Length: 197
Image 1 (cartoon, one colour):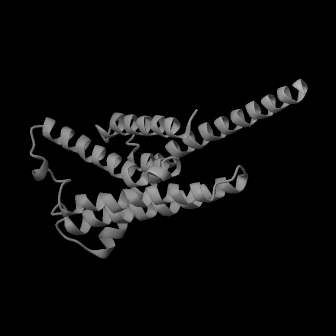
Image 2 (image 1 turned 180 degrees about the horizontal axis):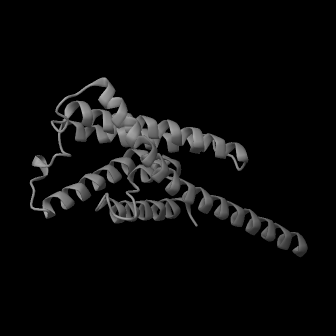
Image 3 (image 1 turned 90 degrees about the horizontal axis):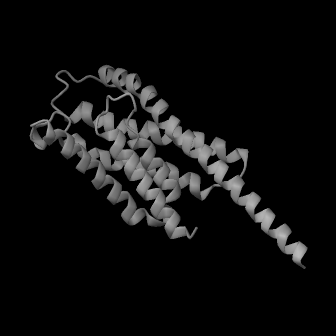
């Protein structure tokens, strides 16, 4: 499969996954948005200039559709404040984590360790930007304190990390299977060519 065809397929699958899971954050299938941006950074690094903004626009479009379908003005929803726009750097921190893994990718167990470190760091930063901006900038929190912010940060960090790690783990397994299949196919083709000589 040609690289651009492969990237187009990945982008389409990531967009579909985000739409399917972002429409309701409280469904049994959790929101995959954070993982979508991490995986996108890994697979779509050459398309970062337009793939990241495209996925970001899709996330906003889904939120807009969900909110307005409830009969609420997008701008009047409690989730939409100055803090909402911090989702851009928050999601880019996930993308940057995927980029970092891609730049250091080798078919070895060491890459698994790099992925874990990148996932932990990018999720912590994403949570800091998204939750921190909501806590401090939105009108939803009446009495803002550092202790209240820290408690809220850590209350939600683990669930978001678990969800993101689950989706990224599935992608890593698919990547390992695909890499193994490609290696096996290349080995078979090489053996067949050697026999013909």
